[in-house]
Image (cartoon, rainbow, N blue to C red; front, top):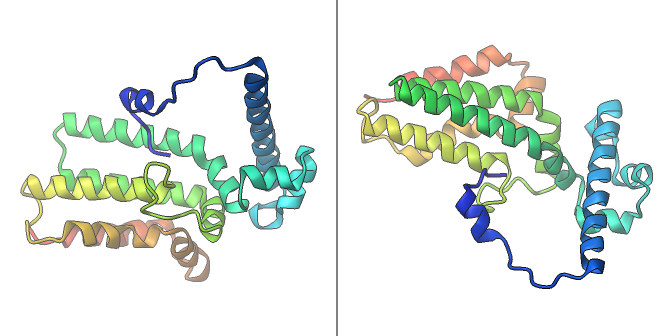
Length: 220
């Protein structure tokens, strides 16, 4: 889900020579099947709720065999993550534009960090059900590389902002940047965030305020 620079995208593209019409047709059919599956999945989950939609329901509504569905998506968690792809790319773009604007405006690095954490909480709230299902499907692995789901990008962004605050003299160099970033993001792990909101009944405002207090309490 990481947004790749143009040169990275080009480096990752395979060189294809002499692709046949049959191969092109097969590739187009696969893309069409994937798009249809995701469209059906999104519609069913909007109507019934994420927990109440099964892989069998999706295959039946999309008009594909369950074998075909499972070849493309190992479980419902992978489907949920695929549904989040567009939303998360748009979210990444919005966050990075705002951070770049704040850097240009010479705003405090800790202010940038607080704004980013608040934005991440908003994203977690909006997409909580899909993120929890992805986690249950075993696909929310922070160290899975460039194709990792949202948690990895969140961690890299928060860690980068925290390190920038250290470099700017806003935070002591004694701060363990790596662990602090993990601790700031711990409440945003899908199952933890869901527990705070549903079981504990914490409001978004309370969670945001708690994280901001942690940021404000970092040694100078």
